[in-house]
Image (tube, rainbow, N blue to C red; front, side, top):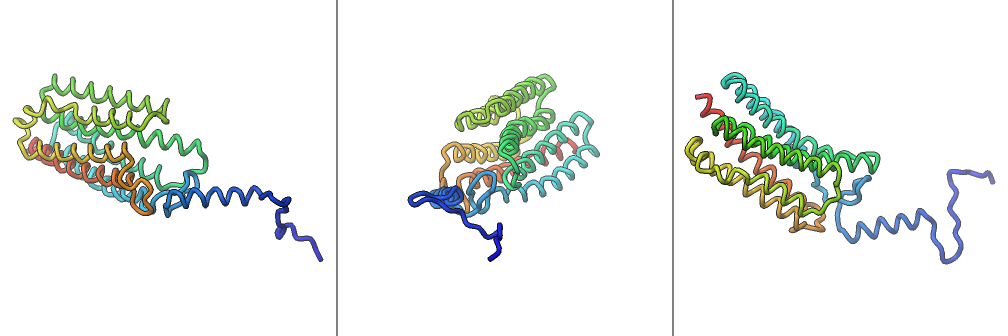
Length: 259
């Protein structure tokens, strides 16, 4: 009989198990406990739909942002158009980075952690990016400068936090995002006067959707151990819905300014 190195079996003493067998049991135990259906090679089991929503949103946001930015540069002054451009780039960046982080099988744990940092950091950047055209178009130059200074400083602090301490408590993310997101509340009367009630209600609705998603993310509920659609998917769906509502509000604001 010839010796074939490709058809050998590991031999272990009675009462012991091979390393491969132990790893297989560990993986099966994790999968059974979490009850999820999509196994990411670099991060373990995940719900089947993880990341798909943001992948689709990334594609749609490229199209919608391109149209919005093009229209803005055709109809607004350069400062206003630049503000809209910042928003459009932020919108695409939010969903594109999230889609890459959640869907791409990164080869190393180090790569995963850096994309996780980028994923978390772009949220705060996007919040500030959303403020940018609204502040420029709705407020006086002085008020806009103050608001944007605060928003972008907060976003920068959040970026630094995620770069240097990615494993910080989850609740800290929620506090940072909600604080940045609701900074504008004292200026709602000005928004109401300058942009009208419809835009304000849309901004409020989007803010509530973002808030609901952030709370679900912080609590990891509902769907903590879901097989197909878990708490993180609820968070992503709320983010998409809120982004759509705010996109409509920004379109209305741009059209008012252009008219």
